[in-house]
Image (cartoon, rainbow, N blue to C red; front, side, top):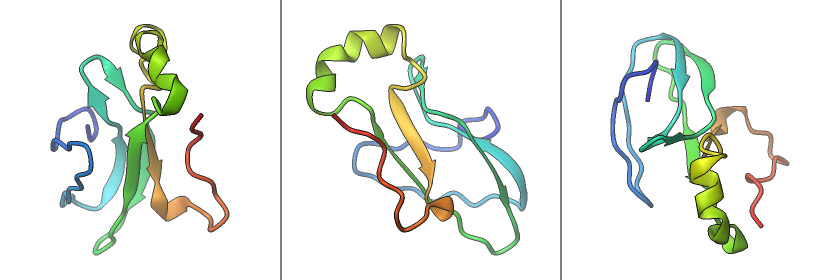
Length: 95
């Protein structure tokens, strides 16, 4: 979802490219009523931005799926801007 509008669909293991005009945007992922964190970013002409995403339900957390979709719906999946990562930044926490 880019500025509240669906701009594409992505499945497990896939990547997509979306061409957008320069400007300020808000990006998040959505699955049914669950969503990722929101990221605000600025993109300039001829700039390429990259984002990573994944599920928060890894390992033993899979047993908490009902808790995530009921109460933690905005933490069910994660999104991060790989352009702003430092070489020492760890991946999102997994159990």
